Image (cartoon, rainbow, N blue to C red; front, side, top):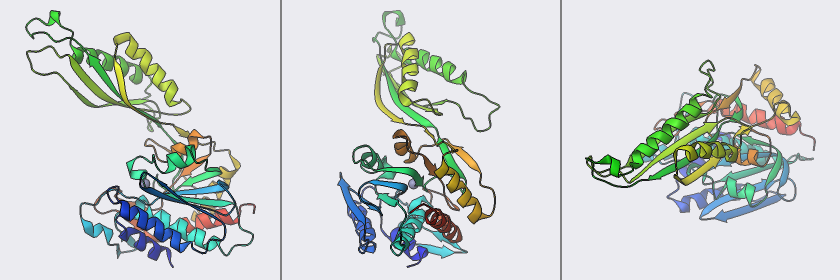
Length: 366
Ligand SMILES: [Zn+2]
């Protein structure tokens, strides 16, 4: 089976979060392809999210771990679930994000079955990345103890840039409670919206003081006020208001340390209630790590050109490995329009990705 056939087969599964039958069916299909897998194979199921894990060694540790997700975001046009090939591109929902890379990894592991001796490699495929990875990667790493000396997540970046760092994230809702009064006598009340504005200005000042406008990569903390709501009418002093904030920050600051700073500032203008807290650990892989260096060199050998090392602002599943101290890299083949109506992947670039992975794995000590 060629990579392109595997990919076409994967795309025909409508693996959106609202189709648990399809999430199971696609993992069943992968499982069937590996029915002759002679080593460790495990299925996982949590909250209707299926995952599969293959390891050439016993247990849940490997030297190198490849990670993919088989779920996709919904398609407005159902024809996106029928792959279409044109000018060397394969169009379809998930072609790049990330059934294309999945097909490459599946082909790689099918080929490992005829290797003797076989290097220490594992493949983890999950079905809930697009909805937060709580029942997939997060659970498998935190609760099921899956570990590796080096982790490859082909689910970010673009055109074979090698991503070694991602910003951390802190999302939180800040709720203010005030005291209602008539709008004609605001001194009798305590306006919750005014409280939020003061808090926001203090946070804005703090974040902006850390900005370095001369840095084209914006590799410093940022803050977005995504939503603000409160009050009842023009002539009522608002007694309730809240705002949703999205902070992004580079490593090595931990989300806990960052939150402490935020809380300190809020205490000066508050009291406020904090809700809906979600955090992402920043990724910052040591570029001098031997397995990182080896991967970079393998990429350069296969691509026959220097590889750009890059950092990204968004968070991927890589954060769950970084949180446990595992070095992790992120890369993508060539393609465009992720989550869009014309998502495509370049088929030649999938072959290139295969050659990178294949050569990397081949040169690992057995
Ligand atoms: Zn993805």
